[in-house]
Length: 361
Ligand SMILES: *Cc1c(COP(=O)(O)O)cnc(C)c1O
Image (cartoon, rainbow, N blue to C red; front, top):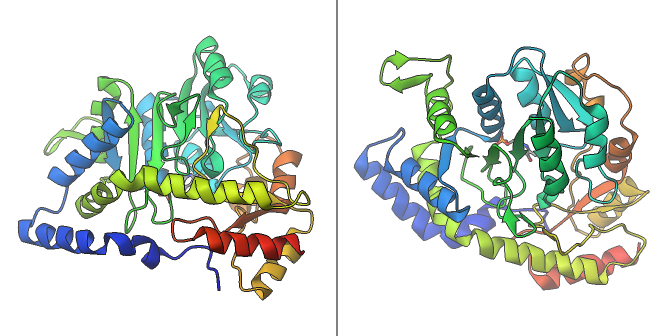
């Protein structure tokens, strides 16, 4: 059996270090916003050659707090891709803003910069891009639009830790880079966790306030805040794994390159382009008989996933919240996409086996 992912196996190489960290944590007895959170923020900032990082509770909150930091008015519009995980769109709705869905480019699956222009109105205040599957969006034209129209840019980097566009890291293009460290992500905690990269000291101080009840000083609350602190224990675990992020990404890229080289042409493979350093959070293919293919692989003891089976526009929760109805490119991707095993736990031999089975379909 080749699993899609196995979190216990994934974290096995770090077990001794994790146990030692937990022993220190117990010994110290400091549970909330301690030295480990501050050190992880510093180290995650250094990794990105940035100055400001604020640790938060999870990826959804990283998006919500970034939007709240901008101080938009109720009813303002935020551009967001139609082809994304629902969390991106939920963050906009939770802030009383209007998500304006924009179709992806059918070869990258990421938001189509040309389509953004057609969706701008006087109410547009921000573009929330998603670097889906670990591949960066085309940030040059997107930043050009944002600068020209004075829009804020928030990057959903939940699937793109260490991904690059023209040699620049995901999360360092816009005003805010929002990360999730959900256990399955390329940099995964052993529970929920998230972080935000921001560009100014003003935003940095405001985000620190927002994550902690709006308080800048204990029991003094300047703004309507949240309880969304990065957990001290998760921060200490993330500090163990961060130095291995590049190694994890290189491994996933190696597996992806094997798929790209040997899978036959009946499957549509991710586009490779020298401008993009993809970290393959998800290695997906497109196939017109996706469900049959998934079933066939399972019969051959290969577990796959679908990211995602239901498009945002078809989610009952979003009824009444979207300004349009018809997103054919996103719909077509959702009908055909299949995610293949491509984890740090997999060996090249396992990938060759998956390819052999796939090529016989
Ligand atoms: C995982 C994910 C999120 C949400 O992260 P959580 O930590 O689970 O809140 C947001 N956006 C995308 C694209 C994701 O993949």
